[in-house]
Amino acid sequence: MSTGERPNILWLCADQQRFDTLGVYGNPYVETPNLDRLATEGVMFDHAYVQSPVCTPSRASFLTGRYPRTTRARQNGQSIPPDERLVPRILADAGYTCGLVGKLHLSAAHPRPHRPVEPRIDDGYSWFSWSHQPPPNAVQAAMDWPTNSYTNWLRARGVEFERETHPDTDEVQIGVAEEHQHTTWCADTASDFVETMAGFTQPWLLSVNFYDPHHPFDPPKELLDRYIELLDDIPLPNYVPGELDTKPEFQRWHHEGTYQGARTIAYPDRTDREHRVMRAAYWAMIDLLDRQVGRILDTLERTGQRANTIVVFHADHGELLGDHGLYLKGPHFYDPAVRVPLILNWPAGLPSGRRVGSLVELVDLAPTLLDAVRAEPEPGMQGRSLWPLINGSIADAEHRDDVYAESYNAGGDHNGERAYVTMVRTAEHKAVVVHGHPGDVDGELYDLIDDPGENVNRWDDPAYVDVKVRMLRRMVDRMAMTVDPLPERDDVW
Image 1 (cartoon, helix red, strand yellow):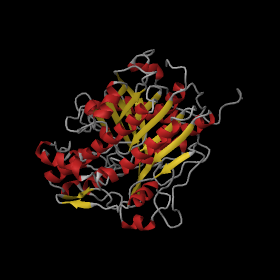
Image 2: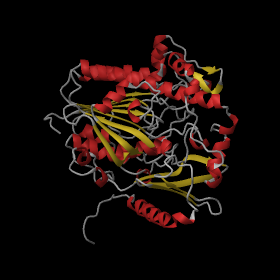
Image 3: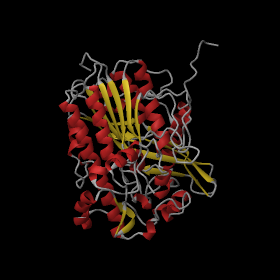
Image 4: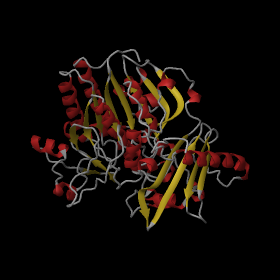
């Protein structure tokens, strides 16, 4: 950290974006020049893992630096307790102006007549332009969510929000034109904030929480058409027929489209062309996201704030996208579900072109950002600052031996059966434990050297008994270490 001024923070979070969706992460199909440049001119993390495979627990975790079960916001549809301390609250107390654009999802956010908007705790955001998502259906549009800033933005433009089903599959929608997209609204609104703050001396933090590339898959036609032209070249999902026979039962339910009341996509019912069109639509949404991120970065540059602004980019969790015969998300811990892009860029205070191979967790972000602005860490934080890793004072392998994630009924249930699942991953192996399901396959074990695609479950393989025991010991240790450090100990007895 070389600058004498406290830096601004532009915190960009995508929703449901898996790690392999940027050119810089090896995807040869997407067009992501802005995010690629952000990575090549900053610090890029190759193995960043979320602490939950669904929204609320993950967001609560990286905004507090605490694990999902510690924050008590361990599942979607649950609200974060008011005593949790978020990074924007901490920085607001330290003199920062903190703003939010887009979704927050730290509380139950499904629209109801008696609950028209997501309730907030004392989160520190004094500038709040909220929109959980674009209208998914006529029911929500009719309820109108009067505080949905995106809906109001469209109304002011005289634009009707409409989608059209793609002719190849009902799982893809042709969305509104790019200039009317939710992500475009995010970029417009974020740019307004950046422009405004250029006239003030106090530092700022802006959380920009895009909804893309979250389902429904609904890119603008002009971005989807490019992929349709090369559809036959798009690879099919990573799925080996029969691989789910040796895996937990709820994965088979999900595969068949019966998990959580049929709110998942039935993989066997889709043709190869449909699988490719869904992947094309998802990638087109990534391209849209990149273009709009580029507009925000241009505003930073034009207003003279780019050099001393930390730009953070990551996602709250991944997307299975048909891999392992599964779509969307759930209590699943394959890398496409829990491994995400993570980029830090700060021209005045970070190295350029640094690529970190160490295992890191998004719970590490909160202490990292406090470290960057020389603010004291909160006593309840459980993450580890990434600064020693970034500046080379510790080797990559010294930051973490493993990463840990959890799903405690985080995504709902199936016919009253709730999934409680935990994961621990080292550089060589991954163990996933399904708790409370005796009689069924109750775990997964992957040899990530021989089977990087995680297709062969070694849980019951006699040749892996020693590995399984070691990984289970790690799991127990990590679960024990997520105990809340609060309240702090006052004395020896």
